[in-house]
Image 1 (spheres, helix red, strand yellow):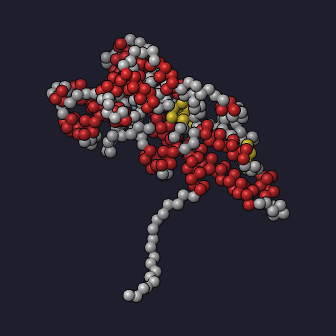
Image 2 (tube, helix red, strand yellow):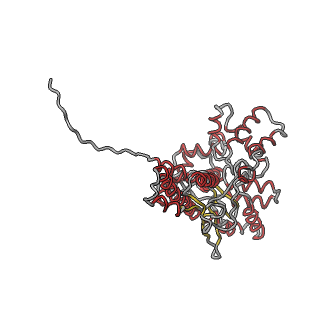
Length: 421
């Protein structure tokens, strides 16, 4: 048997992550406070880096020990758990309540679905039991608005806590949850047939005064520092700017760089590597800040009606949509959204909270909008409609939804099937 040597040419693709690319990716997902701490550490360790005081905005504080010595005792979870101790709860109610509290986002909202909580609790408690605890216990805790599933629900919880007149609460319920009204102006014109203008104006004013992130005031274990700020303009529009205040501006030490480049001095290899690292870090931080601003600006443009207080409804918006428009990778968008905040007229909001997924591929519909549509159809039905018939009705309006989707979201709002209604 003869043995032959054969040469073959083969093409294949392989993704290699260089050490610098990995460090760039890590920088993207750092919060503002984390990146500030990293910059200060790098200045101490790398002699080629120094603070650029000439381009540093006034009002910059330079004592990071203030941040390091903040109180770490009171958190949102601790605050809520302490309130449970004052309530006479059964063992099951206490367990469910504690699990929900630990599932809350840092802004106090509950983004995880109730059926996911049911699954994570090993199906010991039903979705119905979990919803009862959420509505009757968690959402009654302080601060008002805790435990809501979205911005509209946290607004309504706060309005109910204010004990406003029943008529105004009825108006608020229609403005917030009736799918007929796309924004405040639209709602105002249509509701004037049944309510006075002063009542509607008063309700809209109350809605605009509500806190959209009731949990942030108790997040003392992690200082919230927004990367971006919305600057309102006279024409009713707004600009989105990167907040340079309290952000250390760095530059390369030119004198030290010239000494290293001078061939007479014969700088060692380690010193040259430090210089290269310093240049890379300056570029990487600038790129990180630029990408944060680009993503934040696009989000604000898409959610302009919500941020300018023309509507309490978020428009459907996903990571993939942002990535396509900005021509960047969806994973980059996901990293940018981690622990990034925008300072808005309504307070600091996380960039991630301004996104809303769509349940339909042919029409932009958020889960909350779909649940409102289902609720409205069932409320107005003359004959008991099955989930398939509800699906057919919505699909005639271009929703393109399967029956199982209707069933899923009908159960989320705790509505029985047509046989049990």
